[in-house]
Length: 69
Image 1 (cartoon, rainbow, N blue to C red):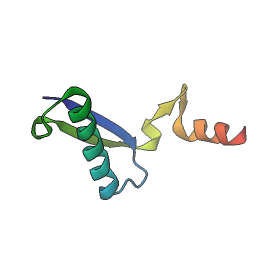
Image 2: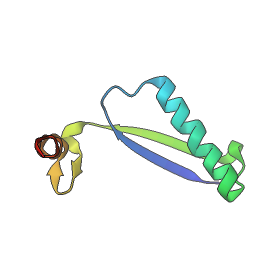
Image 3: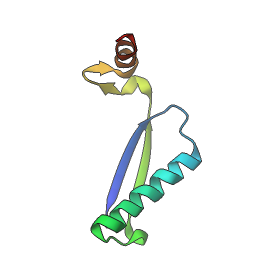
Image 4: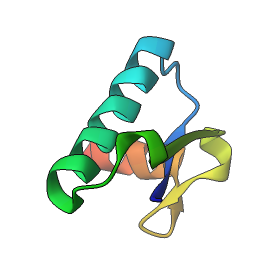
């Protein structure tokens, strides 16, 4: 009974995009691990951008620096 938790920044991810992620992750587990899709759980959490960091920096600062290079 797989449980997958996908975290994304809260930046306008649509219901259709979430549905596609859920279907894609489920399909991957079915194909690779032969898991039963009816017993596969996928949860999507949206995290505020201010609560997310990359490379030791808040996301906004990371993106600002990356764009400057």
